[in-house]
Image (tube, rainbow, N blue to C red):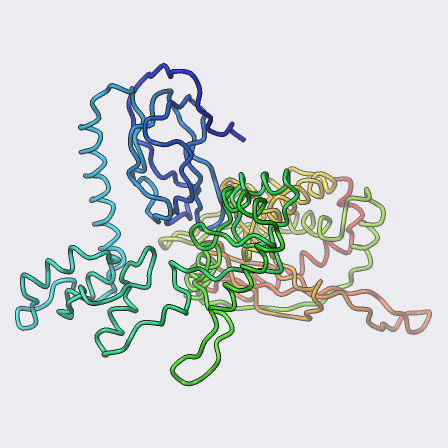
Length: 494
C-alpha cells in the first residue's frame, strides 16, 4: 500500500507528465475516477496517492510516479473513461504545460472517437441518409449536449433534437434509453426514481463498493459501513462519507439512508409497485457482460457422481487447514496433466494449451461473483494450495483483490455443492475452454461383501466448449479425475 497524499515541503520536480487512467488487467474496459486527493497547486512526491479509481472488478490507487506539483485536473470525480485516458498533469510549479494540455486533449478525443466507433451497433450507420439527414442546427445540438457516444449516434441517425431531453445517465448524460423514449414520445423516469446520478443506497448490510481509505477509516473510528450511505460513483463509500457518519452519528446516518432508500419506491406505467431500482455496479455489469460473451460458445455439460471416501480420508489425514476442496484442486491438476486440452483458452480461432495450471475459483462476494486465480497449482503441495487459496478467498471477500489476482486463469472451478445443489450447468469463463462444477456430497447405499453400506459420494458437472473438445474427451477427463480421487491420500505426498 502506497502512502496517502499529504502536503509536504516544496517538491523537487524532475519532469512533467500526464497522469492516465491505468489498465488493471486485460479484462478492464473502463475505469471510474472515485476521488482526487491533491488540489491543483499542491506539491506531490513520488509514491503519493493522487487518486482512487474503480475498475469493473476492483478499487485501486493511482500514485505519483515523479515528484512535482499537481497542476491540473483533466477529469472530475465520477468520470468513467477508458484505460489510458488523461486524468491530470504533474509538472514543476512554473513549468509551461500547454504542450501537455494539447496532447491530453488530442488523446482524449482519440479515445472518445474509438469508443464511439466500438459502441455503435452493428449494421447501424452513424451517418443518416440524405433523405433523413438532420439540419446543421440539430447536429450542433447533438455535439454540444452531454451524451454517450452510442446515444449520439442514435440521435444523429434518427434526427432527434436532444436539447429538450433530460438525461438519466452519469452526471445527467443522455443515454440510448433516453433517445428511445424521446423517439416514442415517452417521458423519462420521475425524479423519485434512481438513475446513475442517484444510486440506490443500501442499508442493513455493508455497501458493495468501499474505497480502501474509507474502509480503513471506518475501522479506525469503529463506524459500521452498513450505516454509511455512499456518495461516490455507483454509490461507493468514500472517506468523506465515513467522516460525515462520525459527525452526525451512525444511527442518524442509517435513518437518513433508510429514508433515501424509501424515496426510490414508486410505481411503473403498469401500476406495479417498485421496491428498489438501481443500475448494475461495475462488478455486476462485468459479470453480466462476461456471461453474455461466454454463452456465445456452444456449451455442453456432462455430470458424474463418484466415490468420495478417499477424498475425505486424505483431507482428514492432512493439516487442519486442508479441506476436501484443496485435495480436489490437487487431483484436478494431476488430471489436467493427462488432459492438457482442457487447460487452455480458445480465442481468435486459436486453441492455446498451457503448462501452468492457473485454476480460478468462484467466490460469492458482496460486490458480485469474483473469480480469483490460484497460480501454478501443478507445483504446489496440498498444504500450500490450502494456505494460498485461503488468503485469496479472504482478500476477495474483503474487497481487497487486485488485478493480478484475477488474470491469467487457464481453468475454473465453481462450487454449489455447499448450497445443496445436486447438478447444474456451469458457464465457462471466457476465453477458457472448460469449467468444473462441484455438487453436493451425499451418502448413498452400496452393496458390499458385508451387506449394504453407506458411502459418501460427490457430484461433478463439467461444462466445455464443444468447438474445441468433444463429449468423449470430457467423459475421459472425469474418468481420470475419478481415478485420482480413488487414491487421494497419495496426493498428500506430491
